[in-house]
Image 1 (cartoon, one colour):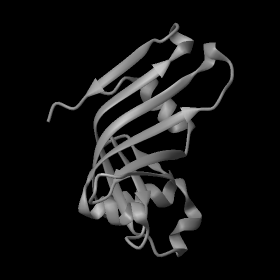
Image 2 (cartoon, helix red, strand yellow; image 1 turned 30 degrees about the horizontal axis):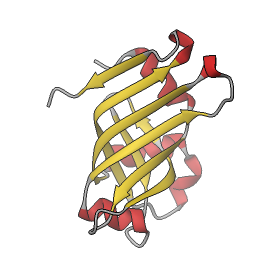
Image 3 (cartoon, helix red, strand yellow; image 1 turned 180 degrees about the horizontal axis):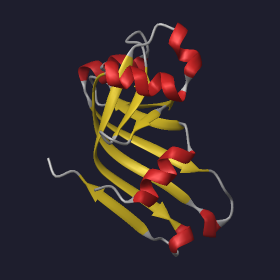
Length: 138
């Protein structure tokens, strides 16, 4: 069960940084709008396979994600680091994404599900360097 404090953090934001690798192991990052499906504990992003990160997702589905609160105040630092596996989106993913971003309903969407295997929330509001960690049981 995912700690509700992690879910709250996820729901307060809408952009994640997606890290992929190419065939040579060269890392690449892209910023993506996301929707979160709490019921299935997964992130939904859209990315066409003509983009570098889209091609990387198709060829090498193991990815890393980051979501952060940008602040200069040390006591307010919060951020997620996530290890996940990508797969093509389904109808539920489409509904979730369009619910979060209604304007996307008229766009051609190439959806991806990012299924977390590990989530770590660093939250200094709980104490300096305090971390909440969730690990998939699969």
